[in-house]
Image (cartoon, rainbow, N blue to C red; front, side):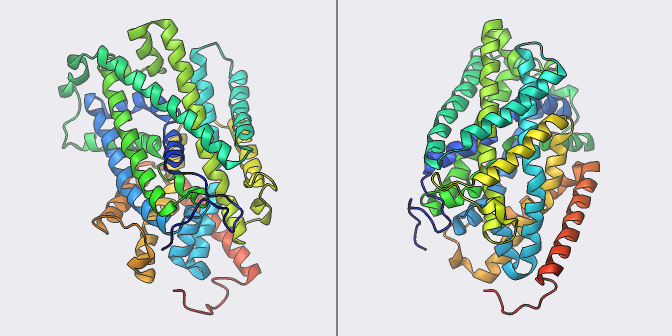
Length: 458
């Protein structure tokens, strides 16, 4: 398969993002406000210093699931990511129409919700720096979304440069936290109290691990962001797999080191109740002024992550509309800057409204429940189907130990889906509504399942 160069593609997008930019966008997407908010919750769920296991388990899931994304992304480097993968895997004239439609259906609501959750988390953490009323907090979250939109409304080459600056700030801040903790590290605090937690083979331990993994997996999400930008990646068959695994391993190392550094200073019994754990941590080791600086840097990291995730999501409705599977309005590309500006405008507008309406509570479970069945489990099973239909030669990058990573990924995602409880039922109901809407549309357009297949898809 011939490698794609950096020239403009037939879609109007430009392949100008290399390995550095792709990895940077992935990493700043993964590290948002999430890990700084969920770290105390993870400790509370695991009830002890062995909470580090939840971060390692989340990284393991990301790695095996990353194999699926790397294989699909390298074979089909187009804007839209899962929309393209699901359509091609299940048949672009049959079940792939339903699966890709369901993915778009969930994205229209789920993507702005993810963006809004990051903006809400930003405004909540900002309350460490200054007293904020609930109304002012809402104003901040809405303003964050607007500012993200303004920064993204430009050429992709400029975005690549911005992403590198943000990546430097993200990694630099986390290294500062890790080094600060290392210089004040107390192993008795970090590793003491194992006897207070549940036994490793007890049901309580695994229930706690399930709840903790919901939070750590949420903090790792974003390793596939490069697949959504496939139409703008230079040499995608090489760059997409490398950027996925480099970003997962790099972030896993940073998360685990940060966790150990913090619980080596703040006893886990205290850490699990902390609202601003990073700010408290820095205040202990460096004083109040440094804590305010650290809080400001965390807010910048959260902002940088929103920048990356909004960029990736804006390409999904665009790709669907380009294929005629969504409203044609979303397919419009800016006449001079060559980016899907209408898709960006609409998603950011919905996200801004969501940021004013919703609260952060339980939002992580809702996001996991909504995405697990179609995007992750559906994508994994779809790869098996696509391999059988297309053959190994279709894939320029192939996962090791096939199909074990797929089996492991499906089992873990299904377990996480069930662990969301009430939100799992909501996720099923939401997808059921999507199926009904698709059938109405399909009947009007005389497409699958209301039209006979005219040919066999190869």
